[in-house]
Amino acid sequence: MKNILKFSFIFLLILSACQKDAKEQKTSNTIQETEKIAKYASFGAKISKDQALSAKEMFAKFETMNVGDTIDVKFASRIKEVCSKKGCWMKLPLANEQETMVRFKDYGFFMPLDAANKEVIVAGKAFVKITPIEELQHYAEDAGKSATEIAKITAPKKEFAFEANGVLLASK
Image 1 (cartoon, rainbow, N blue to C red):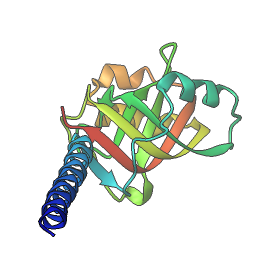
Image 2 (tube, helix red, strand yellow):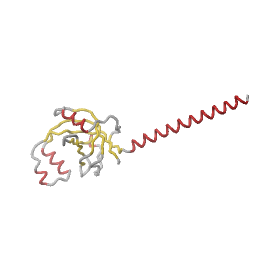
Image 3 (cartoon, rainbow, N blue to C red):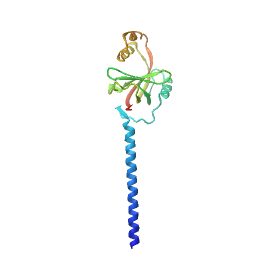
Image 4 (cartoon, rainbow, N blue to C red):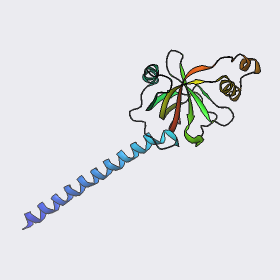
């Protein structure tokens, strides 16, 4: 009888130690996931950083598109420029000195004015369009370009455009 009691006590001790390790592991995983998420500030719709294309891969997709084509996609890049007045648009480099102009769905959110040079992941619709002269001049003005630089804009431009519904901005 004493042996059965000792065996039962040892068995319960081992079982409780295993459960404690499992709880600690689960807590550790939750903390790691939270730390990963915390490294990004979220704007607009909630998106994940998973399965984002690189800027170079996004450029390859843009090159196969015609004016009027649209695709849903998510990609990562580094912000080249942000609207200096409100943060209502940003330019993201792609490849071969090409870039995409990113605006935000329904004008529903803006980027911080100091977001230039930070890593970003955007999700939304990519499309190719022809931007008229007046719009190009307006964006140049928003970017703080001089009157001389703005006056040099004299022709419409074929552009790779993007309407983001969600953005993750690296916080470090």
